[in-house]
Length: 317
View 1 (cartoon, one colour):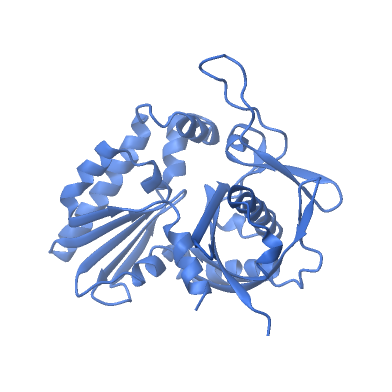
View 2 (cartoon, one colour):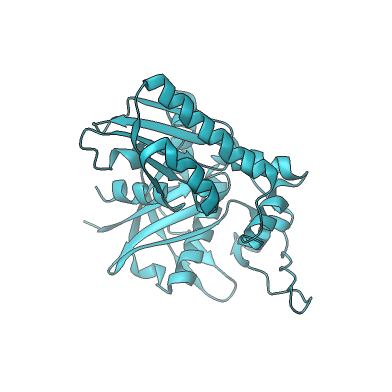
């Protein structure tokens, strides 16, 4: 029997992420969920005024189709599929191969040594719980990952590596991560601040949430409110993390804070532990974290790989 390597794949609206376990721990990687159609431009150096090398790389698909990936693709002509349109088998396969290439490049681990990959993915509770959207996603993931794999290669024009995968299942974002937490009878709220949605899952001492919901009010809505080009707005924020947040992004965090207050009012008791995960958690500055501190007895802001890590854990079961 072929040994399987668990892999968590978080296929978000803003970024695609993977989590793979190796001998010395878990390793993560991400890229924007955009397929660049042209070589992007790099940032302009504040010291020299010259263009820096673009934070991007290219891969070759089919016979000679070259696409670009990486942070600076946010500023270039690209394909970005959102919500249910992103559950397209070819689109999934392209971005999955690209983020695996990034993982290999960052961690300097040969993908060919990993063997067959058991890929577990996730989607927001509001979509997962609807049979039509759930079935559409599962069908696309199965078609993408259960294809015999003899022809699935990652090629950068200089070298190539073959990957072999199987679809290991679809789970709920925020819910799956929260279900693995030690609860000890406590009221725990997990908030996944994602690209297109914010997902909430409330636990009261069990591994099954007493309530979960999805709000279509994610980071992409805030980026769109900053300017007409949401992707460029996101790129500007990523390139200038030390600068003050634009007002629409501050309003985004305020909206999440207000939603948590409404949840507290509805359950008529305090939240013992609040976990904030996702891309919004990764961007959250210290002064915004401070405003959330009164919302629960304890607050933990995790990195943006929390869902990806939960997927990885489920892939290994």
